[in-house]
Image (cartoon, rainbow, N blue to C red; front, side, top):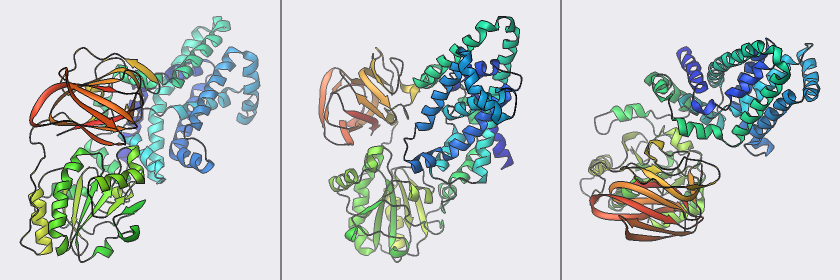
Length: 549
């Protein structure tokens, strides 16, 4: 654990020198320059305490109070403007610093004002989510906060605070040299701080991350994304999981015994069971159970369905049960009605569990869509398979565990056997920016994009008006997408209501009427093709991702 805390500290240092923190640096610089010798330390202390406390508890606190999740960030930005105002207007500074001076038991509000500034920064200083911060965020959201997580968060914040302390001290040294011209110096610092706070309001930090690139990624690979760190971070995340996938992925023999199968837990709803009653691993003893993790807009999952249907038809009478654990990838896949419609449309007749909170996913320590866990009649996991393929092997395992020697589950394998364009997300949260070309990416508001004149293979480009936010790209007037693909089949996950027209190499290809949040087929062919698709969207259509076959 000591080494992991050291990695957390280094991860904080890396975060503090990444491009998305640049808007915060002028505030730290100006804040340190605007006070006495102890002020930089007060600023950093406030930041470390605020970041640690609210990163671990803010979501739970706001949910309890029924407040929006961005309330504390808004309050923090308002406080930054107040602090900037105290530098611009001396009388306002006196009014604010007087109670802080009493709180700090000092004749000056230097410490109290610095701590307040640092506490405000701690609420806006959370944009760069590497593996350490991702682990902290997930466990805090699941309200699994223990001593180890608190220490890891504290060390991470301290690492970032060390860099910012150097910045604040540097600002103070500059201030001393300009002390003779202090009449204009403090207002100038106030302007710098206000401008930086305004940059945070308009998400300039995200824009900087996009424009400058992830120049800290190499450092992350050798520290917080190293094998040691990954192993121990998985240990923190996977404390609720009783199945260890490392053994499953390393095993080369068929029907290895991986231990007792975790039960279905945290399920929001059941489908295709009598009166929607829940199932349990214990209640299925005596049957061979195939636990299939899937989600209805995942093309890889959809390509496995014919094989699962064939297995179910051939061996259900002999004691095979399939339980589909539907763990959503996109927000719309949480909706019961959407899953019910997909289950009916896709002819899924076996029980389906809606794992909206990832509870069963975590219990199995799962990381993939699709993923199949074969459970024997005693309730032990005997085989694990990630992704598509090896359907004949799975059928043989089913036969062995059932003790039967015949069946009719053979279905043509449509899994791609040659390289194709990788899955391509369209919302900024998961967009691979190395495969995007065209206008500068701006998120959170309607923006007019100009498509690139040349789009390399596997890349995309936006054109017309789009609003990019989270997992979604929402079409506006004249919205279009250009995609250079290499695949047999092209699919797109869409939502909302409207129409999408597709052209391939300038020739009309397809018209898609968007009626629900689901996967739509853009192109289907017998051979692999390389081409450039141009898709036009009516306003309001939501685009999530491309997948390929």
